[in-house]
Image (cartoon, rainbow over all chains, first blue to last red; front, top):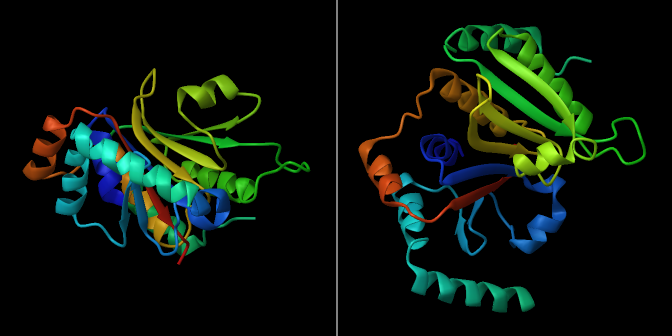
Amino acid sequence: MVLANRLAMASDLVRAETVEATEFPYLVTRYQVYGVPRTVINEVLHIEGAVPEATLLEHLAILDDSLKMRQLTADWENRRKG
Amino acid sequence: MALLDEKTRSRLRTLFAEIRHPVKLLMFTQAEGGALECSMCSETRTLVEELGSLSENIDVEIRDLVADADLARVYGVDKLPAIAILGGGTPAKDAGIRFYGIPSGYEFSSLIETILMVGREDHGLGTAALEALRQLKTPAHIQVYVTPT
């Protein structure tokens, strides 16, 4: 997804990685990638399917919401323990 | 063996003529030809080198994840094959963009588009995105999982 790359180029705070899922099965398991594209932001924010710009920007804003991020991190850790 | 056919090479030469600022493709591979070679490493290196051969404004540097572990750490590279897209100049400016695994199918187009974006030094974002980035305080690590189609 080139949008993530554009954001990375424009901001030193953003890193964008495109990962070819079939070559990294351990990450597919870790992030529960059942369909592509799947976007993972700071481990805990997951978006399934193509991501419109507004959606991606809304998710970036969540990163600055420490209360919500704490909640999402706890949910993520619970899911991973399964 | 070449991965890109002549028609693709010719099309890419035309596109790469738009590059005004040098772009560097820093690729990490490991132990090619040996027992520990990563899947798709040699194909990815071939692809990156072919891209480099199509424009004098595309620089290619090939490194080994183990032998050049310090450099890999600087660029946050932790899996293979990896391509870091850097702006030209010394030192090269890290655009914060990585491709892990061979960029084929749709991802090949993304790679080309990304090279052109860095080569034009124009991210092409609109005001909404720039405003969101201006307000952002937390480092964002975006991973996009894809498959070749």
